[in-house]
View 1 (cartoon, rainbow, N blue to C red):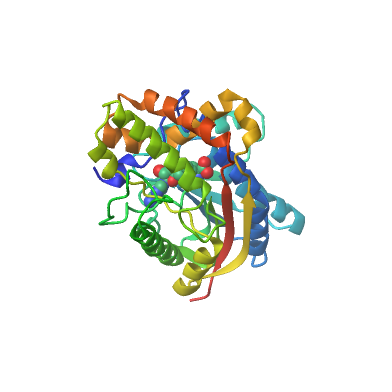
View 2: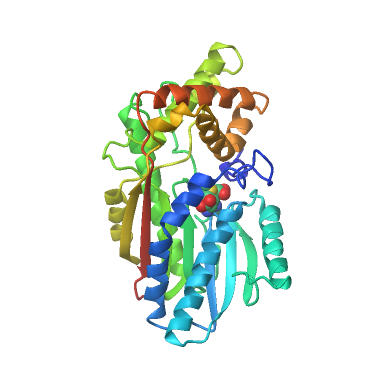
Length: 360
Ligand SMILES: C[S@@+](CC[C@H](N)C(=O)[O-])C[C@H]1O[C@@H](n2cnc3c(N)ncnc32)[C@H](O)[C@@H]1O
């Protein structure tokens, strides 16, 4: 099945949904608020258009996407008030892959507007016009030079596809310490191609002097197999292997499963932006918030982390292995995570980057 049909977060607003299990992503979004504010201030130097067009790419289906959009809209309104400028209208595009649960977002948007109708001010009421744009951000989504501001959080670390012709990965599902060198090289090549494409396409869609703020998972070590993300996926691989030992899934299915994800270093990101050439880096910040050992005393904590990993990966895993063993798989995941955290912490490293489009 094509990746675009299985790469989406768990739908709905229930107990096992992304909407209810995305507090890590919310925290990283909040950490990027200063970069967002600075970027809006940079844009304001040239004044605002009558209609400010902004897009959130990889918005998913929870409240986080509205949090990002609200933060940008609030910042624009605040700058306009400070500078005595008239507040623009906002055209807001929420993008994700076609199988994303757009219905849940639009229910939340509707609730937001009705809170305005009840007399409670809400940032997305009034002069904000919100629509959904299904499609891959590795392809054209918007007309030429039509966007003033692009935002994306926790999304551009997803690749357009699993790197092609990966050699056998020794039972792993992502780059791991035991992976052959060629695996890490193939992941890096795919990321370089994808991120360059992303930049090139956005440069066509963003108006001159437009801004883009991206927040995504990175890593602090030059060694691609040495990062928190790799450990989290090694724990997933061990959980799958344990299911295979119990005869619940086939080993061959583990061998043919790899995750379409890459967490780069800041040097890798800067080099790709430099080589692609369409954008200038205004600000690059990193933030390290490790998953720490003290939390393991709370057994519930590992279940919460396992659930957050589940809501992100379950549609892909269920499409590949079948959906009947997912509860068991993530019970194992929580156990193995607790074992790991009793010995070592897990790096959680965000990269936040603000870019402006160079003149054509
Ligand atoms: C972890 S969620 C992030 C959601 C939200 N931005 C946040 O910060 O909580 C990642 C989202 O990126 C989307 N995504 C991944 N690859 C994509 C692509 N090529 N085009 C559009 N969306 C994509 C996924 O479907 C998913 O909804």
